[in-house]
Length: 402
Image (cartoon, helix red, strand yellow):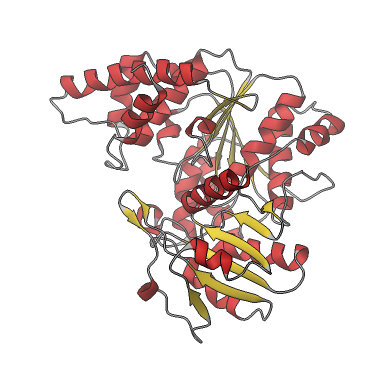
């Protein structure tokens, strides 16, 4: 591969899914690559139903401000695939992405050949391998690594260099993969806690989830600290960021207890994350509230920050539980709900009209986002739903703007 388009085509052409409770494919791949994950220095590993990206962004901004060299791995990306691999906030270069994709492709081919096609690393496993290989060569002081889904069986969880394991929030999401109860989901997320690490829990984590996390931490001998909202504030918009800020600050202070408060605040002032209650045009906001808990947090931010009538335009995946939150939004006389078609992503279709059953049917269906925007051009609009949807919308609207 000599062009970035070829590298991206290879990555996105990998199988999307495989057996979720096994590291067999990834272990085989890492063995061929020489286990680059073991060459990382120290890691802050972040899981949670919501808030992972925000906390990772804030931790990175502060660590960079304090003079550390930080690698950050997040998912999904918002407008450019290279956002997933950053060093001190700078995206991986196209040349490096091509270089490391080629190395991982060679290793993947070897694994598939040696196993007679029985082991075929998935897209996320390939992306994770690229990240580990790239970060291992970067002489990092800190790697900030965001879990893809869950924790216990997530590809990122082959890490052995975790100093701080962070659980931001626990709510119902990805139930088909993670379990139908908050306790079951907490058990999956607690799977990132390692012996020798410390565990930080976000202020909004319920007692039910907290007990599960504490039990897992006790089992591996990891001290548990619970974040509390304090006087720090970040440049990220939305009232829900208060909890995320507290979580990020405690994770940082747990990693480096001698970090000075003024350095922490200076770093938080630099934090930026696209698609989190982000104003992209006059009267148009974007927020990736992709599940029930996220929509409830978004509703709170709307009430605190936006005056007058607001139209919420939603494009969601069908396997999310956002429709449970619609009922709460319906009761707010200041809010009009609108759904637009969203195709979804591989193997995960978008929410369709006949899948939503509302009490009083005060839900507008538009044939397209363009129609929804043109019919609401004189009032405040918040576009939300799947992060994949938000990514598409942001790319489209920001390109039009520029």
